Amino acid sequence: MKKKSKVGITITQHLLNQQRENPEATGSFTKLLNELIVAAKVISREVNKAGLADILGPTGTRNIYDDEVQKLDIFANKVIIERMQHVGELCCMGSEENENLIEIPSQYPKGDYILMFDPLDGSSNIDVNVSIGTIFGIYKRKNPDSCSEISLSDVLQKGINQVAAGYFLYGSSTMMVYTTGHGVHGFTLFPSIGEFLLSHENIKIPEKSTIYSVNESYYAYWDDKTRAIVDYFKKVDKDTGRPYTARYVGSLVADFHRNLLKGGIFMYPADRKDPKKPGGKLRLMVEANPLAMVVREAGGYASDGYVPILDIDPGFLHQRTPLYIGSKKDVEIAEAFMKGERK
Image (cartoon, rainbow, N blue to C red):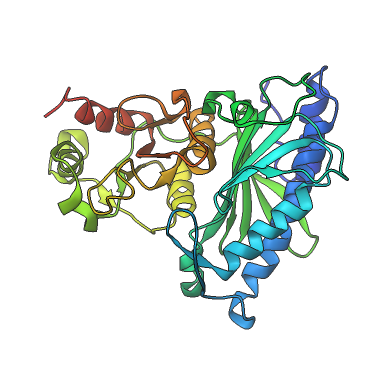
């Protein structure tokens, strides 16, 4: 008997249904995620009116990565922190925009969850109306029964330990895509009713594709193995469906979302252009790990070129990593080149 589709139900209904299927659930996670959804709605509203308000462009400051900070970055970061700190389910947060862990103020109750997030990925593209997004990963502290203060040792966990991950995409429509380890589901915000409704049920990424996404302007700064990957995808070979088609937006969450639905591989390899960023540009904890969990639950794969992203043991909060993510067979091809198994 064919399972009845749940398309059209609200995100709240969906969370409650998942909560009921888990006898040990207390409702804490549902409460946490609902508040994050509210924060995303606030950010979405501000993004949609960005061209009419004085919130476009840089602030004139740079963050801990020496990246130029945009006004919307600051706004999104502030909204998430202020909405989430009073929920009572978090012991701390970590943001791309904050050098240190974000502590929960003493006047609020604390829980055992840890929220890691990139408040506004791709924000430098907002003034040209390119899709941008909020990326998040949720962990539980290593010692939930501990009465001690939260420390980095509680936070620095492998991505495989995430209890949930996902992203909000602010584009022609606002979408939420998330997983708790039981499939990947997409919800679209209907502005007329102010609710996210299930629009993409049980997303599965194609196992192989004919699309690659990478910033080829860095070609001269790549090592020979990385160049060989791109040369392979561009070579004409009808038997293997090559050459692949190039699709690159320059906004991680937008490139990833397209490939998740259509199939494809997104690559952000290490390069020699900036000596300050020898290990790659993307952040392991707030960007790579959440998307790696999403793609794994959709049947795809994420690697740093040598090992699965989700198996990397972070050494510090803002650790960077190369990223190869998307359709499983395409990422495995890239990984084989990096390991020297293909020439």
